[in-house]
Figure 1: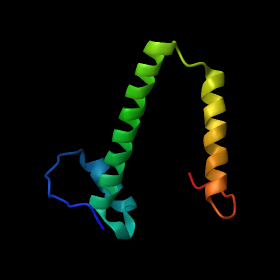
Figure 2: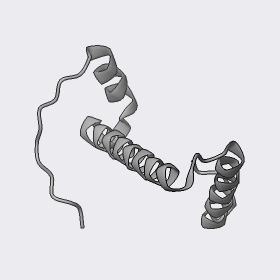
Figure 3: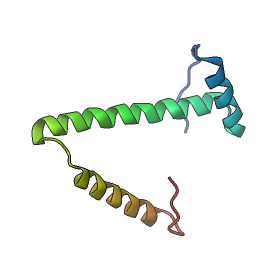
Figure 4: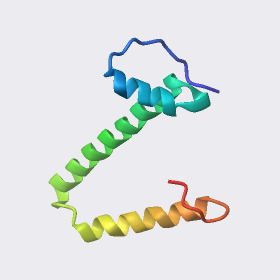
Length: 87
């Protein structure tokens, strides 16, 4: 079942709006913008979690970041039937 929706009016630069409309495809501009906002919220949440972790445990090293990227890539491979990278 889909989440309830509500109509909003937003303002953005025309070139960005037109590029989004051109890329939105069959799902439409609203779905495209909603997905972009959802990704930004996930990004912001991750940044907040990282800041909390670094405050408690110290800075995250490049090696730790790479190890986690490798784990994520392996998990994605296991989730796709042919092992193709879907990200």
